[in-house]
Length: 398
Image (cartoon, rainbow, N blue to C red):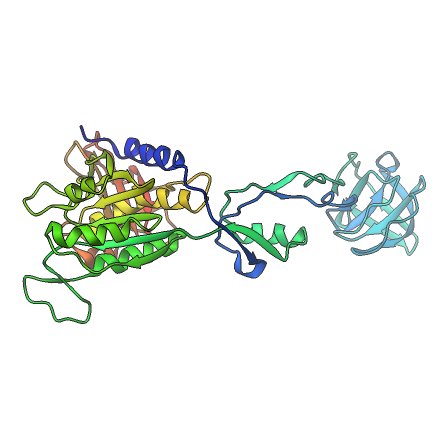
């Protein structure tokens, strides 16, 4: 029985997590680590901050001395060393990031003070203990985990690694992914196709998707629709960490991918999903590796890669929790579809990301419509219509 897409996605994630294949690692210089998946926890090498610091430009005070007029004991800037304790009735002019002297328990913003002369300042408001002070260790105490293993490193993670003195970082190696397009109608990019032929767009689209998801693609030669042509190329594909075949997975006479994969020892976990485009999507495990049979039309291939193959690839690359980020936007005009399938249809999000409109297309072979889209609306299988202004889930275009 066909699965709903979220059930099928969960099945993929659970199956790939259970694989016993060890994850390879490599060490990269910090400047090359952005976008890679961390292979070890990163710990704080000291307290952050390492001492009490001011969060504002103003005056460090004893909170029970204000309101009142205080004697200015001097000034301290970011980068200055620690100071003598602040005496009662005194204030210290302080800059953002500067160390707070012992004895001071609050910072009063400069905007809330009046300078009487060079050594006196008046403050009319009260100050709460701890006000505008970043206490030692408040951001991260020494030894605490800053970034867990399995995190894809973004710019803020690079900052944390630099902060803790990492010039290099241990990351998971990029998984290798074999791409096998099938079909007698497919010709090379540099060929002039006849009316009954198409160029091999799927393989290059998949290669781009794989690189973005953190894999290393290898495009195999196109396989003709015969078992003799398929078997050696599928064997070659199974030498990689993950195999994706596009086309040849429906129920037609020449849809031979699944029988050929079974012959090579692949056990399928599902062979149909209640989505459109992409119903005939198949997923299995063979030789302790994930194997996907994706429908051959480009729209189907793109959608099913995002829903099912991408999380598998991300897990193989060490990512702890592959996510399917879905946004929400409101229709600019009424929209309806047939009940029964969850549909992922090309759409245009407005510049502010708040509204969208459905893009008319001729089905999942319509690459020009895919190219015009910047998102995909997600029409639930159990809701038939939406009015202008109704909210709907949106999947970002990869």
